Amino acid sequence: FNGPEEEDEKPWVNDDKPQVIVVGFGRFGQVIGRLLMANKMRITVLERDISAVNLMRKYGYKVYYGDATQVDLLRSAGAEAAESIVITCNEPEDTMKLVEICQQHFPHLHILARARGRVEAHELLQAGVTQFSRETFSSALELGRKTLVTLGMHPHQAQRAQLHFRRLDMRMLRELIPMHADTVQISRAREARRELEEIFQREMQQERRQLDGWDEFE
Image 1 (cartoon, rainbow, N blue to C red):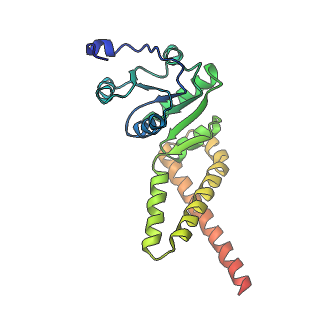
Image 2: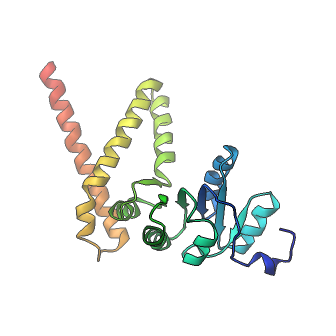
Image 3: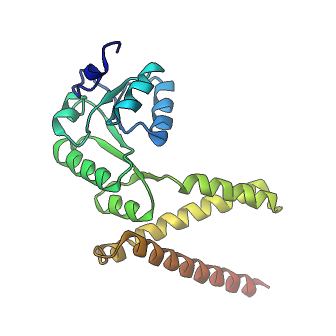
């Protein structure tokens, strides 16, 4: 790790059987990597921003330079021996390309991925990837829970409301997959807006049903 920068740019990795490969070590990937390393997991991190690679190495992180969509690099990084791969790419296109490569060349890997939003979440589900995290969803939901508490809701009730909303949102996400498949030519922005309208409509319908059910007990 003390050689010149041009040596750092060599993409080849000789790591002994990592348990996890983390692709991308930006703000999102760093949190995952820190958690895994804190729990003594053997990880190989792949990052194609050389400045980020060198910065992380200064702080003792085991980060390697290279384009993870190259099969040879994945194989050299230990993909054949690893159990899981965590994909935290910035670009949805890179994420989906890497998913396809892993499914084709390393089908034993458990694929976990970062989704930038609902559209990419749909694409991951369609590709058979069920373990993903929408980067703003969980943090926004947590802040929403705290807001409910400040408005007078009991903390336990607010937590239940948070869990209920999470389940409802995931169910709607799965139900809307056919609609996503039929609109592949529509821009991501237009599709996201249409899905948001669909979500609001479904929530309003569910709220009406709950109110109607409450009236029956009155």
